[in-house]
Image (cartoon, rainbow, N blue to C red; front, side, top):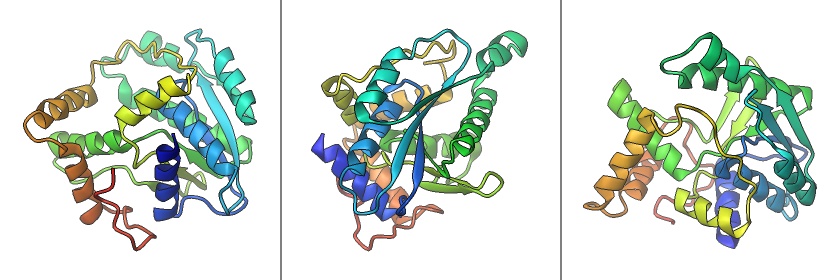
Length: 245
């Protein structure tokens, strides 16, 4: 767990994610990634030299999920918790009956989360994307769009005047899974009918298969992404951390 906190702190400092006085909203879906992001920032808050505040915001997608254990988790972390009711599930799957729902769902979730953060006075929003997510996004862009691209560690949205952060950028998915067990995170199972049947899942499985022949492939790709560097991936820190695990 200390290693994860160290990796989060390095990402925060490498990409200058946090300034003194920041009020950061964590988008908590109930999945392991967002819950670990919340825990890590709450822990970092206790000793980081730049004081900042953390909140949790959960979107109720309208699918009757129970977030009571997430609320208790937030209370134990001394983090304010807000549930925002939405009808996203109904619109995407019942009204629109989307064959490929991920794009519309993501767009609606982003709008609702950003709006809720602004209402709560949060100018920054932390998301749970980790190292594996970054590599998979890079491969998705390459395979399906013919572009060398990925999300940025820090993204400023000028129309909303908020900044998106990805503090788990140096954390591997295997670490997230182990941490979820260690911390007994109150995971809420994703009811999305498309879960596990996406292009992202295909790329994930491809990388797993390739690593049987080419060990440590994900780290090599991630290192190449940093050394290139992709736009927005220029480190504030002069230390090269691309080979760190």
